[in-house]
Length: 217
Image (cartoon, rainbow, N blue to C red):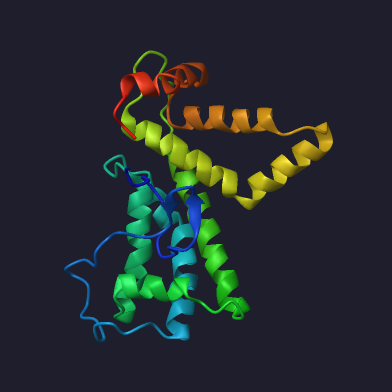
């Protein structure tokens, strides 16, 4: 099985989609400052600072412009690395810091709220980065490469879990008195075009996955 091309860092117990757990894999950079002590968990204040500064970083114009750079082949992975770098100024090992965030006490409503804000901001910024990189012309002939297929499925699953998407689908079902199947299809077709493939052509290429990638499980 392959790893998803994107998932927000630091919350291994939260699930983006079946079989894919949210959690950063990036190692601490060699240039990172010396850690306070190996195995030292962050304090509550450090966790709060990490979440607040991470949210601000993701919402910044600087980050948005950085993620537009075509030299960055996977903006989601790049965003995850930037998230995890937030532990470095505190001298906290990145994996240990993320593990501590995953174990925030359910009774700590302030940190829990910040944690969910960090997560939803990650999702929105990731999707926005793909929209910002949408090519000026849609592909109507070529095959869809494996990386784009994976990005499509990842981004669709992320999109489906946004609060605003769930609200829209609930309202659609309430108004039409039936499951919001067409609304979901419309979201998926739009996402194909965000990734540069004309919707009908993209759907055709997706239908050929088993034929083109017979051994890819």
